[in-house]
Length: 284
Image (cartoon, rainbow, N blue to C red; front, side):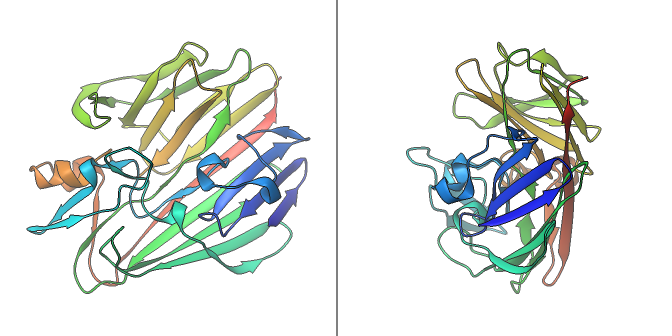
């Protein structure tokens, strides 16, 4: 377990569980869905974990790349897709740490879950204002490889939780949880209690607000896509800054432009980086 402290904030991480953030607390109140790291059993139950080297789903766990089909592991129970990359299911190493920051690393060698070698670092820094995170990924394979980055923060839905952000488009979802088409969308300005959403928004302006009677949380990122997931039966809401649209590699294989999807094609030795922060303060 690693504990970070700054001002009124405290954060616990459990690197061996997917480099995850077990919890984030403001004056003892959870900002994210939070479990003490010593009690956490899976990254999927944590407050936040990195999405590496892709976010959301690759349809039917089958990657078609440069004319070659690569079967992938179906890594989320009975779901037929590959989901959230591989980093969240692998142990990360601690490269450096102090009272308010830690740098984690994961080195991937080709396997059934992902056929391209890469290495990735995850730097987490706690300040009195919030939690700052940076992901950096380098393609270590000998060929161009698809790549994406993101995070999966999961916030509590307290009474009167309200989410607000601006965007320009939204990918509609089919019954198979894969995107079907992009439509214009202004984003969201909605009460969370009745909200049902599982979509990737693009044209995001990089700021999302979550307010309730006790707390105001702000998600900020230089990424321009945001996946939001909740429904009335869930106790939380996922607000996920990501670099590319859901199922981007399949959409790319069907002819969509990589730039429009946000998909990066990294040459051997090439890197990409992403940043995000979660700020928290008591409700005014």
